[in-house]
Length: 207
Image 1 (cartoon, one colour):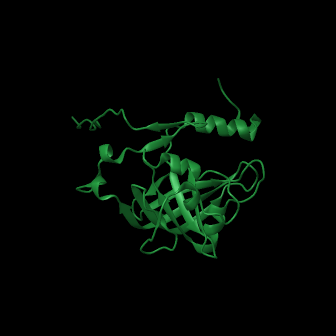
Image 2 (image 1 turned 45 degrees about the vertical axis):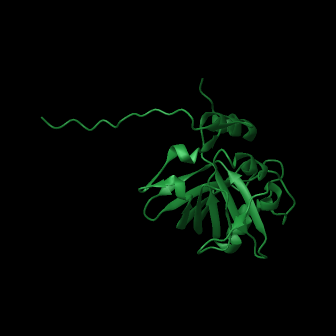
Image 3 (image 1 turned 120 degrees about the vertical axis):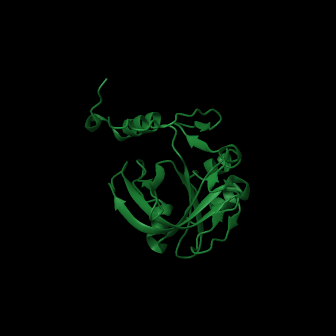
């Protein structure tokens, strides 16, 4: 089957992406607005972008129903700061609660019953229960489309990383202690409970 993306409605494009690009890491993004009110929302179009300088990226979608801008994007534009918190099995349900469309100004920290903890160099709080949190300052926002179904790509430079002590082992993250979760399609998530190793094969030596 070959699918012409131009012929698909936004909803079907979305379902094709989230049903095929699996699993996706989750950015649990905390921000504050210009009045200091907290916001916390999950985004699964997320990944690392660069090591030097350490940079993360995620996209904030334009809701297809309303076309309105999300609080996360508005807050980052106003303040230039945000925190990307990661999710594990213990925090997955709280993270999912933060996807609820609450009234503007209502704190998802309170709604999901998670603890705002102070950061070192940015004003937004991190999630105390998160296994890893990245303090970020805005590097760039690239608007891919401001139409319904569009999105803005947010690039953040990482200034501090908070890692739960038992996860950090000689410069590496202990995967067994971490117990990360990933996003699938619909209401589905996955745990990293089964993994296998493939060792990289070196290039053959010239004869």
